[in-house]
Length: 472
Image 1 (cartoon, rainbow, N blue to C red):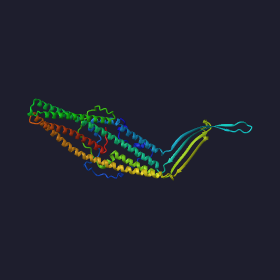
Image 2 (tube, rainbow, N blue to C red):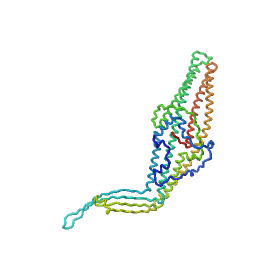
Image 3 (spheres, rainbow, N blue to C red):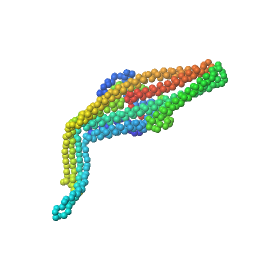
Image 4 (cartoon, rainbow, N blue to C red):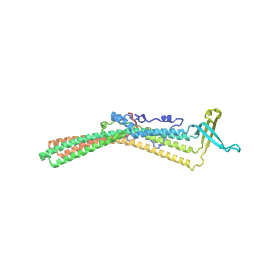
């Protein structure tokens, strides 16, 4: 497994070790979000801190853990996100390079021929050949007097931290997608089993009605209409079974894509809907701001844009640049090491921008507008995060009530189907009642399986909304 993909996101300190030398990560600007955090959630009074990081193993055990590990190593989207982290770290290092002196080692070699017109009485033209060799060490350094370059480097550091948080969010999101796809496959397996059982029951009923019709025992319900009705039910069951198998095939292919496999539709290890795991602690709303990687990434974007605004404003101040060189020049290569032939130069320049066609002012306006946009994006991200938590908490209550009602309906429908079958076999019940009872039994069982999967999906959504991570 690639540690860059599976390990939790690197801290800002690791980024500083890479970038180096006095430039610091910009301070947090979460206070600029402009969205006050309430004291408690509206949908629940639960206030325990912390998020369960072992929800994957509790949900699907070893099979699901293995699939998520495979996805983390092979998924193309996650690889792209990891590459963006490396790119941002390199860009931050590039941004800080301008704060250091530039050194360059140079050499030259020149051979020149020059001809002169001869003097009267001496003869034809005179020519001379001159050789020139040199080696030098050149240096240049722009002294960051006002901190313009440092502000640019700190902005790049914040960008790199944001990309690391994006990778963390993508990593957790991928794990959630794989889990949901696995649960969809588990439900599809149950739906196929229910459809097969329903088809078998319909076929048995159709055979029983056909036998009665063939014996022409009208008082027992044997009629041509009933035969056709039960045969139609069999055909409907066959169509339902084909639909359930199609849904299962689609779930397998979707899971294969998330795993980075070719979507061949090959059978994946049998998945069954697990029992509902314990509800994760919701904690305090204020803790959400520190846990959610998307909020922290949006905050880093605002911090970076703020430093770029400062850098644009500091561009109005004069810049100081020092240059120097040291080396030797000689007529032959053997004299290049002769210290008596050394040459050196040192100089400095101070440049004050006077007129650039409004470029600096436009750069400031652009940076300020970007900072305002980042602030608004942070506000939107915080509001969306609060909304996602409240929706998931509220959905937990409603889905629990739906499951309880569906469980009762399934039990009653199964009992009704059993009684209807007994009455039909005894000759006291009619075929229409039995068909309707069987249909209710199949439909309520199918609805219960769907609701169970919705509750599991909602638990995953709640875990993501709370900013939870995971461990394998």
